Amino acid sequence: MRPKTSKHHIVHYGRDWTSSPQGIYIREQPTLIPRLEQDVHDYTHKVAPGVPLLGPHALLRIAADFEPGADTMESLDNLLFSIYKAAEHPRAHSIERNVGHLAIQALLLQRDAITGNVVQ
Image (cartoon, rainbow, N blue to C red; front, side):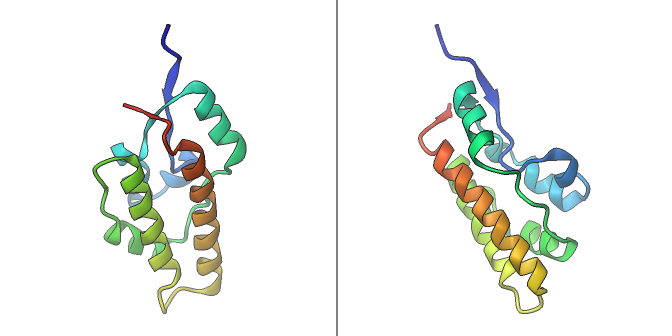
């Protein structure tokens, strides 16, 4: 018998990330919604907090820079880099910078949990 699987939105929570077109664009990228075995999905939510929503200026920069990859891990790496670039932008406020780094930490915790566990 095959294990139960479910779709995991890497960029969660939906209520936060669907409040702007840029957030929706990022959250709804198909390669950022991998299928995971249910126990891996549950574990991921247990060890990784939701990705904090970034401010409107950072979201604009991220959405403009982010290029979805060919698979989940490539897309996740591209998203991490886009968030880093937005957080380190010369015009980013120190709070935006801090929230960006928190978002990166949350995504890295997920990355560790889902690496090698995406169901094709």
